[in-house]
Length: 607
Image 1 (cartoon, rainbow, N blue to C red):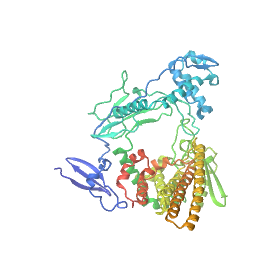
Image 2 (image 1 turned 180 degrees about the vertical axis):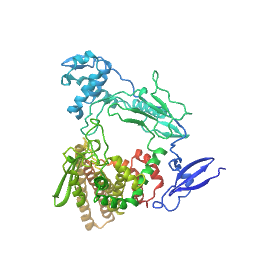
Image 3 (image 1 turned 30 degrees about the vertical axis):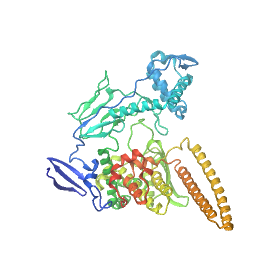
Image 4 (image 1 turned 90 degrees about the vertical axis):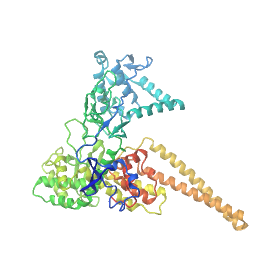
């Protein structure tokens, strides 16, 4: 029988010594979410509640099979040709593969963009032989139509596969998942997130990204670093290849990594979001944001005080933190010249990105923001600000050109360092998470009531989520199928309204008949018609709510905030409190990611 020795480490945590091994255990619940421990808690314990070790070690043993590589390029049939200046040209294998990437996208808007075309053609020429480069000099003279048709036909063939063929394909995919999709972490079988190496293709980017169209090169084993434990079976590289490096770093949680060639960023193969380590990380992230509630008043007093500082650096810091707090702006990161799109955040705002209005639309001290944020999404907002903030902005802009930095005395490193001094672990991103979760909690409290139907409750939830998405500037382009789907929905509504009108007429007739006859048969007919009207009214109401929801979400991306900025315990508690099935809010993947929250939260939880 193991002896358990407990020692208090900090609020809500304790260390546990079992057979000489010490680890930190996070208490199952918090005072605000549950006062009494659940019955039979030992049998309900989840792996993510086991906690982390006292040092930086994330695991003791890690074993996996390595990543799964995409298949090699399959050359085009001889009867499918590329044409240049009206004449067929036989391309080298490397050039043909890159040409096929472009051909597949011919019906996409990207291939109509000048930047995309220019980048593609430049990178494609690098893959050509000297003879091909000498011949193929203009993209406008290239004809990819035959190649495009070939891939369209192949896609149609795949759609037309028999049930047996689809099943065989599914079984092959399942077999690959079984072999490559799991690892052994400290003796537990854990699911891996995306175990497939991304195939080569053309970079798209979001918005008007300056590198759209560039070639994403094929990743080889020689590009990949493997991470596993020393005593594990090291993954075997594909035949004829070797790994770039094999390391045994138990302070990180990734299994494999490589550098992609377009932006030079590091890509990782990580554990699935439902894994213990990912669950712990999520839980800690929201607890730090939740802890900000206790400190936020003090921090707000501090940045208001900074507005009056004699030191310009502190004034700029105060205004920047104010923007991050009130507008949920990202901090912004420094980028090398030409490395990516001209996107900015709070600290990297330039004078040209804001316009000051003493008065606008009946409001005083209005700041008009207009810049490209993360993923080249435009941020446009007109916001009335505190008078002293307005005066400081005027001061920051004095004697500056439009391209000069607004906050020229501070950067994100300095900003996050000073925030961390106010509260351990506090960054601009934590502020964003705090404000997003606070907004969701407040909106749900305002918009939901017990007497609502299920559909009305879901609409209220989406509206609360939408308020967060607007705060965080999570936009999207309207789906291509939006108009068509709305038209179909409107047709359904019209048909349902027609049926309802008919049912009401039939009810009226039945009621008139019952007044004359006064028989059981006539009474039952009235009851039947009443139920029919009631049922159709409910169905029509659902369709109308559905249409409202779709219209309101047309250009708003709800998923980003739901997955990354909203404490899932708020949603879980709301579902339990108002009897909404969790499946209506989170899909299967999301339920797996937030399994820790679903297990530990009851209806009384408040962020």
